[in-house]
Image (tube, rainbow, N blue to C red; front, top):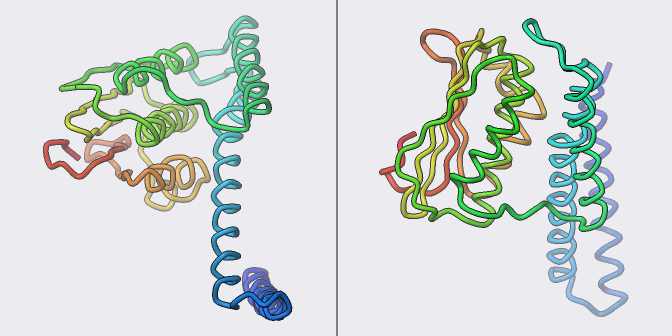
Length: 243
């Protein structure tokens, strides 16, 4: 019996063939070169795919995280949130959702990368039942725009994963930034994860790895030799930024 994956792939192939034929016929009828019409359609499809991925990342990072936290009552092996914690998370998510519905875009980070990292860590601390330590080396404020936003978004998801899955008692965040190059290293002392677990989930795949790649950055995830997980995020190719 044909698997569901192969059926989907075959259906997409047939649909693509039909769409290409329809496009060619339409281009001929409108006296537009078929190559130009196909290139324009390919670009439009790519833009639509990127927009869909952007919206999915936003929903995952904001509304979904808040709903999961509230549904679990903020419960972890060492902590249970009180009503004020849950209300604060719900209020923050509601404000972010209203803003997203109004502006239809991601918020532009204000200030430096060091300031943004500190804000992300401060947001994560009240929700976690483990310590989160933040240290930094050189931080010259040279990273801005999409790379800065990608680093902060990926860091937020990394800390959320540590809270939900690691069982850690301590998480450390280390930042370096110099001459347009930056790296953030997050280490936890939890149970670690297998390679399959590391790359399986939407959060890691889309909200960390692919988010960093879209900003021309990189993300490396590996088990620490003594247990736990190490996540390295970076932008820029300068060798002075340690991976």
